[in-house]
Image 1 (cartoon, rainbow, N blue to C red):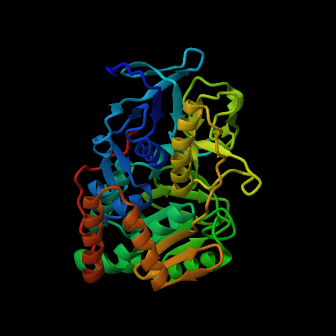
Image 2 (image 1 turned 90 degrees about the vertical axis):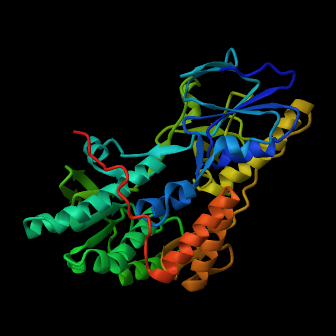
Image 3 (image 1 turned 30 degrees about the horizontal axis):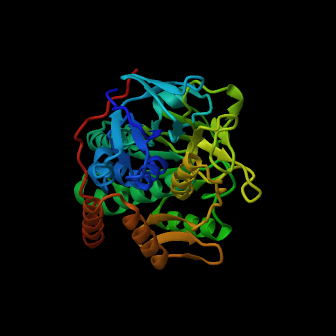
Length: 425
């Protein structure tokens, strides 16, 4: 892998998400060698992926080169690679570009889409975990609008204009709201040969309410906002099957749709090589202690979505969102230095800064520990927090101007089919 030998301990970080990037940044110019490995050469700001898929933002405004993040770190290296195996006995890893030894290994590989064993849904539905997937959704959505404009029958036209989103968590709710705004603001102007009322957006949620991780207040407000935008919300509804044309559910609801977007769950994306008992069954996450050490492996750590740290306050682990990953990465940078220097480690305590979701223009919900609010002010808070959280000044400026333009003109400027989507048979 062409990593130079160093007299300093080598820390290998697998994954350039929120946790991996925060850890790498926090180790800047410490007396360690840092090797950051990822199968992509960029960091993705996943909370805004839905805006790429709904034509609100271009992908380069929510992605940032990993090499640029560490370019001023004299002790850091990046390698574009995929880790295939861990060998804890020899403290080494195997990748598709070669092997590498480590003193400390940090696994921050995040999650992947969970289809719960349904092969047909995996084959025909659209996932939204990566930028390429978000671009596929954007292309398919715009292609189906074009197909609807020339459809020979009303049933075909309605199938192209039916958008089904499975999963009423923040991703599903935000995407449903964004597509509804496209229907309300773009369709009447750009597709004058289509009847906007023919375009239907269905949000399916398996539990009794949308945004189940958030408060009842947030759920009720979000549901009202969605209904006001024209989204049809179906709670207590599970998808049983999808063949690319027809969505079958656990109820009498049957939907003809060419577009099903799967946002119903995730599962961990572990690396082979560690004992099977360190992976928590069902969620596929590494069991770690309060220092982020993988159980039984004192020199191997797991951070963020791939880690399951059970505490009294969080008996089922921390929420799989950005803040726990960022906070764990920051603390681990100090704890690794403490390990090297023989100092005691500090336990991780999550500082919950609240949760939020946006449903569209002037519509958002925010849950703080002692205060919950919704509407325009919540939407403004959501925009500010996400804007400031983006990596890179350029990205913040681009997103800010895009949002300003979209707000003034009721427009989504990225309605481009750059890479047509074709479903593989």
